[in-house]
Amino acid sequence: MGKRRRVDERKAAKSGRSRRHLVLGGVAVAALGGGAMAVYTVFGAGAAAEDGSADAKAVKTGPLSAAEVRTAATTFLTAWQKGTVAKAAAATDDSAAATTALTGFTKDAHVKDVTLTRGKRSGDTVPFTVKGTVSFKGTEKPLTYKSALTVVRAEKDGEPVVGWQPSVVHPELTEGDRLVTGEAGTPPVKALDRDGGELTTKKYPSLGSVLDGLREKYGKKAGGKAGVELRIVRADPTDSAKSAQSANSTKSTKEKAADKTLLELSEGTPGEVRTTLSPSLQAAAEEKVAATKRASVVVMRPSTGEILAAANSSSFNVAFQGSLAPGSTMKIVSSALLIDKGLASADKGHPCPKFSSYGGWKFQNDDKFEIKGGTFKASFARSCNTAFISQAKKLDDDSLTQEAQQVFGLGLNNWAIGVSSFDGAVPVQSDAPMAASLIGQGGVRMNPLNMASVVSTAKTGVFKQPYLVPPSVDDRTLATAARPMSATVRAQLRELLQYTAAAGTAAEAMSGLGPDYGAKTGSAEVDGQKEPNGWFTAWKGDLASAGVVQQGGHGSESAGPIVAALLKAGSGG
Image 1 (tube, rainbow, N blue to C red):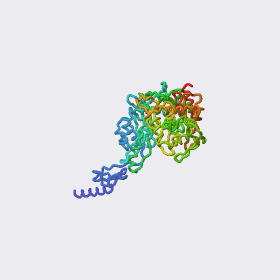
Image 2 (image 1 turned 45 degrees about the horizontal axis):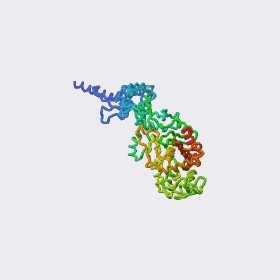
Image 3 (image 1 turned 30 degrees about the vertical axis):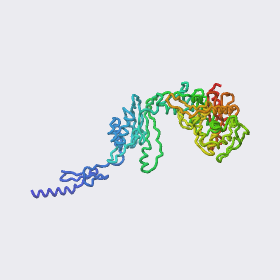
Image 4 (image 1 turned 90 degrees about the vertical axis):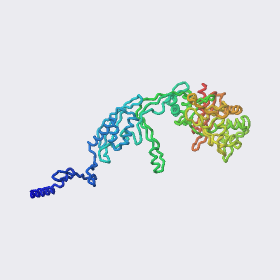
């Protein structure tokens, strides 16, 4: 028995030496005790545990097989289609971001009944089609679009998963964007003229910015209802820039990209806003400015302040929002000031020399004319600059500003016409710029709306804030002036304007429109322009109008015919 045992042990030892290592598919098997126990050790890819642990697993590497790509894509798409967000997100390499996006697809975008159809694989990319229904507060509409995903190996174990990108949910989504279904912003507005007709840009091309302004201001007040849409709400770059700013101490200048509508579920129901515009005068104003480059005009009613027409030959609304030097049309305000202070009177003698200096500047008249022994009325009608400059030394720096604000309602930034407007500017100045302001240069800035208001105030003696939308629509308060024009100033100012329309620089344009009329011409020099801007403002009966033609030269020849034609059309003459 003892011998036999030793022989068996030797055989076993010999057998063990000959079968110590067997390699099976990269796994070495050490067989002990005739195979009674086996220990497996994995080689390669850093997977072997140095401590001899038997639980370490291989990290898969290498190109993805077609089967791996199809399986990973199918797993993700199937889970998404069933609405099991957690499982779908787990099939990606960024489960947190995927969870947020896929949850928003249902809760924010309100997409239901989703069907995802996988297309033909191209390498590691799998296209698919998304079909579903967008449903919001009883309104539904089908949704169909194409997207794609790319399969990658997960970092931790090399298993195939979907490489997460916002574009997986929708191809136009980028980092931070969201899909949202809801009301489409401000409700639409149907703007009406004073007779109840609809105002459209097709009929009145230059009203584009006005109609936009009406929607912005009255969209939620006019009784309309916003439409419903599915849209991409773009990420705000300031959010992502905050961390960069704290790290780099720099400011981001990137602006938020515009949101994009993907599907309109329903159109909005417009509310109605009635304006004061006259359809006939608006049509006439459109026609007149369309025939002249860089022209703008406004027509209003002096007794009420109602705006009857406003038109521009350019896309920018110069008529309401322009900020231009008004040239000699500003002499209406300056004349009221001089008469108010006893420095001028219509029929009294007034100096009009060729030149007049103040504050280190030398001023002159057009073509260096002079009027010897003339009256203030003659100087006004001829538009004599030096007749005003010569009085600058007798005025305070804020005299013109006070007159403009307190009597003409200008420069206080408190007009509420119904849309955005510039209310004129007459800043306090000193020395030469103050003198230049008296003739509509210096820092004075106006637009046709302002100057139509100025001639209206001169006609009636009381400032009536212009308005496009009646204040009764939204119970807003219109601006008022601190004091009315004195009877003396009003009478003399009317006389000056009537004489200018009959026998002065405005006579040719105003021919045939008297006797209840008045006008003032102007031209304003602008740095860099060969020709000055031409201005003209006038009244006839209960109509007032003002216009400007940029680089138009003399106002009597450029803006004058436009203004006069509208006064004639509005009065039926």
